[in-house]
Image 1 (spheres, rainbow over the protein chains, first blue to last red):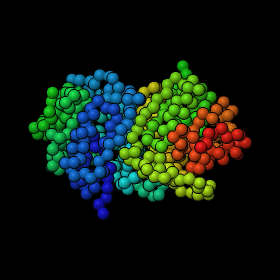
Image 2: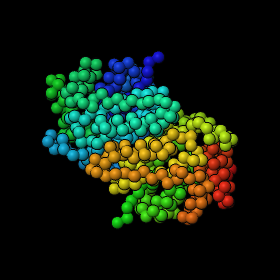
Image 3: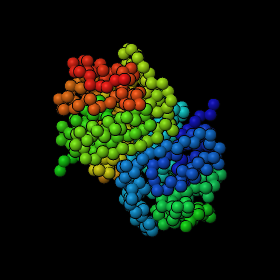
Image 4: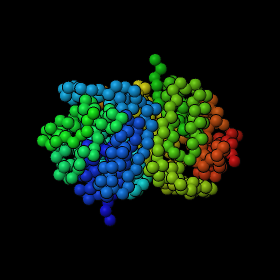
Length: 227
Length: 227
C-alpha cells in the first residue's frame, strides 16, 4: 500500500514544489490548505487547482479565524511592506510574520495525519532566501517533530512522525529548478502577499520580489501574472 | 504594570477554575475561546459569561474548522460514548479525543501571547481523573514550552514562555474545592459533550459523569442543569 503524507499546500511556489517532491518520493499526498484570514484568499483556489493538477484525491480546507488574534500584516489591517531593498529583507523579522503560524499549520497537519494514518508531514519552509521567520528554522522543525510524539494518540501507541522540510536549505532558484524537473507549472502558483482583487501579483511585496529573483537566477521566464 | 496571561477558556469547570487561579496569581487574564466545531457550541456563550463575571477586559473567540479534519466524536458525526463505567473510562484514549487538540489550543494561545505581550499561558488540563488524552500529560506541556521558545519572535528575542497547568495533579473534587475558595460559581460552567439544544447537560457522557462525581466527592451540591 502506498504510504500517505500530509502536505501543507498554500498554492504558492514553495508548497507546490513540496507537493511535487512528496509525489516523487512515492507518497500518496493528502493536501491541507489552511484559510487563516490572510489577505491572499485567492491562494485557496490556486491550491485546489494545483492539487487537482497533481491528481490529489484528498484535498481539505480548514478555516482558522486568525484575524481575532491579529498581530501580522497578513491577518490585521497593517500595511504589507513594499519595495524593500534586499539588504533590509534579510534582517529581522518582517511584519508579515504571523504569530505561531507554523506551529498552527503543523498542528493541523498532525491532527489530519492521525486521522488518515499518515506519519509524514510536508511543509515548504525555506530558511535560505528568507531567514526572518523564526518558525522556518530547522531547530523549530526538529522541535515540532519531538512534540508530535508526545501530543498524539499515534505517538503514545509507538508511532513516530517525520516533518519533511525538503526546501529548507535551498535557494529560490534551486527550488524552481527542482520543481520544473518534476513537472511543476509555476504559472498555476501564487506567492503575492497583497494581490489585486483579480488575484494578480503586486510585484512589490517581499514575496513577489524573492519569487521574481528566483526565476531570474534560475534563468527561467517568470510566468507570474502581475498587475 | 500587571502582567498579562493568556487563559484558554472553554466555559467548562476546569478552564473556569484556571481563570480564577490566574487572577488570584495576580495576572491580568486575556481569555481565548476556541470554537472548533465541537458539538457543545453552547460553551462559547458560557465562556463569554464567565469571562464577564471575572471582569475580563479582553475576551476573544477564534473559530477553527476542525470538522474538515474530523476523527473525533466531538468534531465528526460519531456517537459520544454514554454511561461508561468508571473502570472503562480510565483505560485507553476515548473517541472524544480530538487529534492534536491541545497542540492547536496552545499554538493559538502562544500566538495571542505574542500579540498582547504575555509570557504565561494557562490551560486547564488535568491528568488525574481522566488520563486518557495524550496531550494532557505533563511531558506534553513541558514539550510545548520548549517549542514555544523556538517558534516565536518573542522566543528569538530572548523571551521565555511558561505553560501553566495548575490543575494537572488535582482530582475533580480538589479542583472544585479550590475554585469555590476563589469564588467560582460553577452553575455558570458547562462540561457536557452532548448537551441538548437548550444547553442542558446529558448526565451520561464521560464529562458529565466525572463532573458529577467531583461534586459528590467534594461534598458540594451539583449546580449543573441536566436534561
